[in-house]
Image (cartoon, rainbow, N blue to C red; front, side, top):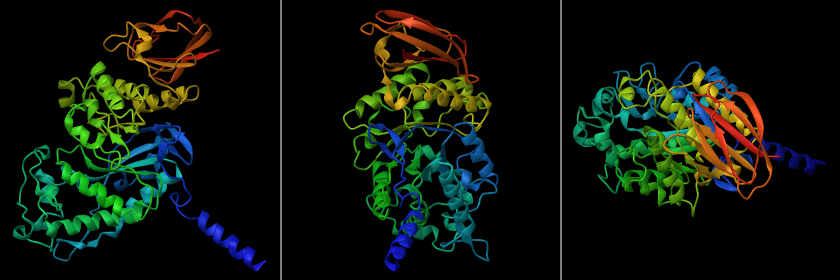
Length: 460
């Protein structure tokens, strides 16, 4: 009896450990590695949140509940502490400067609280370790890493300047060159490494976490490589997945091959920047990525979808609210493993529009699982420009997204069955008409809503 009790207690201790310890870890889906699975079940990641560093907000729990109630299960989390009211990662000394050897416990408590709350709700967190906007322009003036703001090193010792006025896309900030293969700036690197280790000491206890090195970086490859290897080397044997988000909007450019060509380093891909591109170009460039990695498929994420009528610069580029919604549905139809609307005003955040968009996909998912179908534009006739987008398992299941009005012909030749067509309005996530069609020929389908609809077609 005593030995039995010892074994029972040991077993209970094992199962009371973190999600990672119990094997509940996000990883590529075993039956279709272009998607994610969690706890052995495939899962499609959808998101829309008010900001990017959610662990810093005071109403985090209610915001996560709102996301989950809308069918969302995916957030972006930068480790940033630059905004007004944010907690800084480092403790402050009596003279008002930061000590990079001492942590601000409240910053890290909030971070762990966010991971706990998301894990409880099966919400997935894509962490961005470094954000170029944290360390340039006005943000640099209050940055703890600025020598004028800490007690740990001087401008001379660090090689830093007092100002970096250029847009961070210029990549002029030596903060992003500290690694041995570049400037070998050990004075600063030791604190950067300590920060990442501290982050990992918390995040590795949770299995709902993905890692991205940088936010939309224009940096050099050596920087990303160093941190990808550093994170893996300090993962304590945990199963983790890492990517890098390059800034170049043309995802077919050689810059993106730094990630695409290294599946051993980068376990998934993030091409959020593709959302800058409109219409059919947005679709075709994404499909280039899927084709490029087809021999070694990995999940392709989009942790940011840009576009909002509330952002003047975006409007001048045609990146409207309509553009953001269309991109979301193109992503899902096109095989993305995740899609999340960017924060306002650069994106739509968690709003009525994005809530209905996520709910629409969850309604479709009740009938057809996206990981069971694949993009099949070859089965559409007259689908020019931005008319319609198709994913299918030919002869069985079809999902056709119409951004606006339009008519296409679906190739059902070779499948002499009857099919049921069900229409859902993407603006309100409500099912509309349904009807039967005969296979064995090309069948004409016309959108039922002028501002977005999906036809879900299944074999009877």
